[in-house]
Length: 276
Image (cartoon, rainbow, N blue to C red; front, side, top):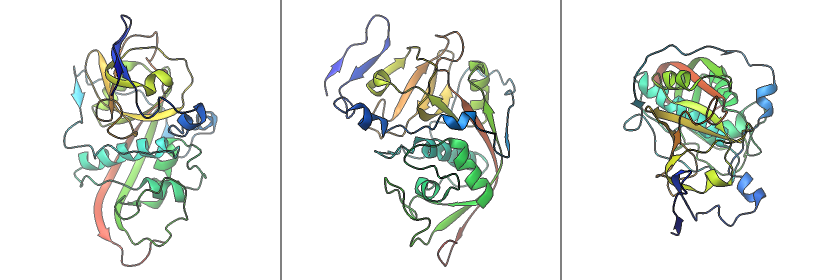
């Protein structure tokens, strides 16, 4: 793989990767955040709250609390991947099994009609909150396109009670985001421009503009950076992750929206018939 060294103004290395020779339209299909969702009326259970101060110098959910890195491919479904990563780990933290949940079910079945053309992570949480369950990705596998809801699937269903989800506006402080990560991974919205897409290693330390187009998940932090999980497979970045610098812009480094989630109840049962 051909790489270029970081410039004196950056702390990261870029590389030639699968995005390097794509058109803007092609690269856009690997994102998929529907920013109009931010402007719409908040859904039930979506409230604003400032994270409590835990004052931990660092924290990470890297090891046994995260499922394997996934790849959304050319379906603009980053919003569902970010949402379910948070839910998977929250379920594990609550004492349940670490199960890869089905992004395909979210894409196929959510009532907001959000799919490969883009969405927002609270849509996925609202769906699970209303259903009280979700299939595993093993039983309801990803198709890289919208399909018919529950078509032909018999699933092991993870029963999940989503009690609340909290949105922090883009003006929230980085310390609040770090404090929220102590309770579990946090879905965030970022600007994934060409420079970000070319990231290979190191700490991404460029300020982006205020627009957001991609959902990722902050899974850890220390005094100088956040550890962020992407949904572009393990060949991108540092085996699917990116380190993003703290304290390099006047407000949040990437002007992102962030959301945290609370879950309760955990049980896996076997469905004999097709899900209704």
